[in-house]
Image 1: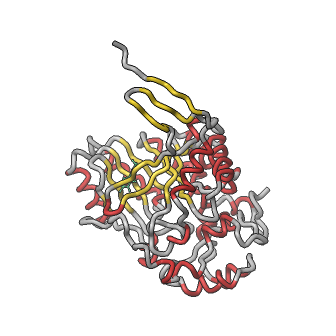
Image 2: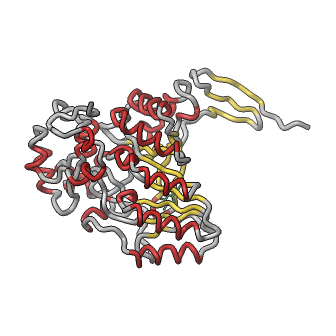
Image 3: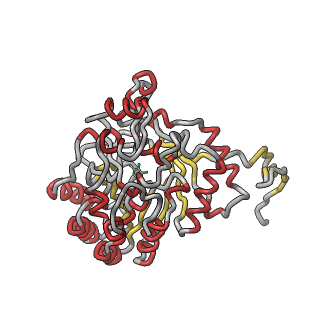
Amino acid sequence: MLSGTSWAFNVSEDLWRSYTWQIQNRIKTLEDLKRFIDLTPEEEEGIRKTQGLYPLAITPYYLSLIDPQDPNDPIRLQAIPRAVEVDPKVQSKAWADPFKEEGQIPGLTHRYPDRVLMVVTTFCAVYCRHCMRKRIFAQGERARTKEEIDRMIDYISAHKEIRDVLISGGEPFSLSNEKIDYILSKLRDIDHVEIIRFGTRLPVLAPQRFFDKELLKILEKHSPIWVNTHFNHPKEITPLAQEAVDNLLRHGVPVNNQTVLLKGVNDDPKVMLDLMRGLLRIKVKPQYLFHCDPVKGAVHFRTTVDKGLEIIDYLRGRISGMGIPTYAVDLPGGKGKVPLLPDYVISREGNTFTFKAFDGSKVVYTIDEPL
Ligand SMILES: *Cc1c(COP(=O)(O)O)cnc(C)c1O
């Protein structure tokens, strides 16, 4: 049985389960997409106007999650271009690189002393319309060369304060197993690098990548490796996504999730509760809920901070603390992420606090140190 609504893809289960097939059969043109979905005029215009700037690519798997009858389907909003992406009125209050990721060494961002971000490719399985690195779409699909990777690794090697390396993109798991093994081996040769993390959306966009036993063995060999993925909606939690996550967990790779708060997709407390519950069911830990960044081409997905706080407040008491992500906003100028919390301390006098409990009641509690 094929997963999801595999309507219109007349393929064997073997092919559907093949990552290579999913990538080779990505939908990349207006004509192609029209074979599967009745596009709205806004979408048709969007696909034409974003060509070359913010390209279109959707795996058959991710496309199959769309309800073609629903113009506001949350998968559709994340995957199909709309004209608003290039509307100057809407996008003028946004920046290509608001967080100053681009630095001295191509692909490397060293913001926090102990952590470094490596962007190893511009390729993605699906070009998410809300991508925070939308600026790199126009560079075409290009993986960093061995020389470029070596430069990044030399930098990490020379900076002893770096303990944590985040490998992202683009889609880092689009690299070949050999290249992934090469990068991990080089990083493991550096004594001060303790933790290696991948920022990947393939569990959501093409979970078939993690059916590859060779890749899983490479990750296991270079333990501790962590995966940060990016589920945004409960519809994305499918049996195939679960299988991918299971494979990672079985090979010792914990899977954490970073959701982005997106207007029309998940800016609804009930949807978010469903998502967080679904993630815990497949043993994915919700780590962050990011406020949508002012990124050119994606700023129309922004909602208010009050909406984000409302969602976090709604989750409290309805799901285990394990299922409540840290709501965070990225500060401009490369000043990093800061957490945002609803006000649980209503007032405070000395050590006497008035708290708001999960059920909304007020509790006065004096928390003294022992003498
Ligand atoms: C988000 C980010 C990190 C990782 O931050 P964590 O809070 O540890 O997940 C590291 N470097 C850069 C540039 C980042 O944007």
